[in-house]
Length: 208
Image (cartoon, rainbow, N blue to C red; front, top):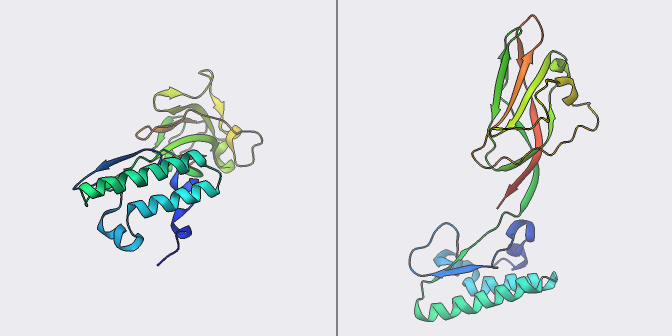
């Protein structure tokens, strides 16, 4: 049997797990703690919650530890009435990671403007737009949008060279893209030939 420390993790993994728990009987969801499989391996929800409470107390998170203990007591009481009762985890967004987001390489014809979208699958705050230096001097950035909101201060075109991988002090805090929002870059090909445009954005992803 694995040790409790092996499953407790830290706040990055669990967020505020156990701070708010609803108790239900019968069928559960994919977000439940417990059920037969968990009971066989870990000894039941109340044992898991008590173990998490001990871990939280050791890290000085006493309010969280108290909430976990109360949840353990509550699920134990419910199981006296309904042995199949389980607890549903109410998980907050607590993981923060820095990830890149790519734009689909797109050929922009000579003198034309193209709007190129990217669709993050998690909440994502763009913090640096990167356009390769080998094409940056051939393009102008006419707009950067998160959803329908422009991220440029004015409507003037910005040289794409501002955003190359060797640019200095080009970190930005664009609006956070919610799940379902697109991030788009509108670029103009300043040359007399067709050029394939590619770019990426580095930013912070927030997950449960």
